[in-house]
Length: 370
Ligand SMILES: Cc1cc2nc3c(=O)[nH]c(=O)nc-3n(C[C@H](O)[C@H](O)[C@H](O)COP(=O)(O)O)c2cc1C
Ligand SMILES: CCCCC(=O)C(=O)O
Image (cartoon, rainbow, N blue to C red; front, side, top):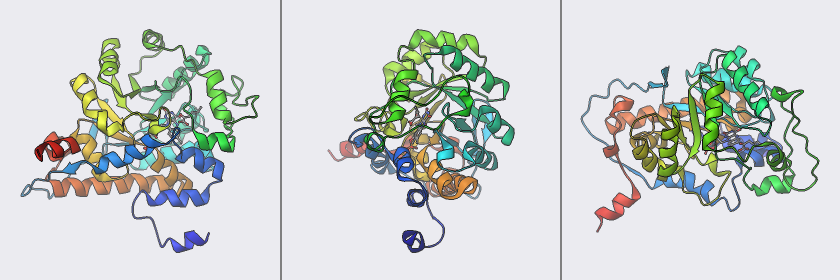
């Protein structure tokens, strides 16, 4: 409370929502949102690696009008900044994913609803007119996952985002200490319970181990294709090898992601592998990006390296925890405002003007010093 009083006025950047969220939430939940896997090396790298990329602005370009808008899988959005799927929004705010979706609608961007949402697929769909994608985990009970895909399709979700980096949950030590418990999920009422018979460590991890289908592999994408007409994006690609395989099985989009560093520690920061994946994809399908985006300059750098848009995870949850729907809206607005300023000062009137030559990676900097 005291800290709240000390922190003067409204947050001026998205990082400042984190402290507000910490003060607003029970420790178990804040730690769950905040945490990464094991040593949290990759967690820091995801953010820090952006700092090592320098900008190469151009001067004397007409920047009196800046257009942030872009088209993702045929949907025009106000800026290349989307909402990543994150679980359990009611642990952050009583209105849960409905508040997040309304903020997405107000900001005219796309929200990816988590498979582990606390509001139902139907509640979120009827709450506003945001363009929504549906994130999928595949359960051992394939019929349950198929049912959810059908419900998403019936309720106007525009794409399936298949998360492929979580055959099991990563080792998140704060969750182990806190014995993190998953809330009951209304989407699965009468189908499956998140309650586990487990006293030790993270109940969430135990739930995932018992429920997620770790046998799901490349050939099973045919199963998903067969049960839906929606475009399929795969989320969790970090290498050229997997990008090539994804092209071979015919996905409609790729999300470069290390799950916000919550799965396998010591994977590279996502911004460091983005270009490798972009080259392998060769423009055949859109490449989206997430991990560590906290500034408009970060969005600019990801676009310069070939992403069509970025997704934002933790800052959205922190905005929601601190100030509900308004907080999420502010987080998106702040990133948009910062991106607009970055484009103005870099000589890029539209997102298509942001090119590889507008940045210099650390490697390039070291090379040019030789
Ligand atoms: C609290 C939390 C819950 C998450 N839940 C999911 C989820 O249910 N499904 C999923 O595909 N990714 C999930 N993610 C990963 C995000 O979609 C995204 O990849 C990551 O948060 C991006 O990194 P950032 O938090 O640094 O923006 C979660 C991330 C966080 C922080
Ligand atoms: C079993 C819940 C998984 C949610 C998730 O993906 C995450 O916490 O990163």
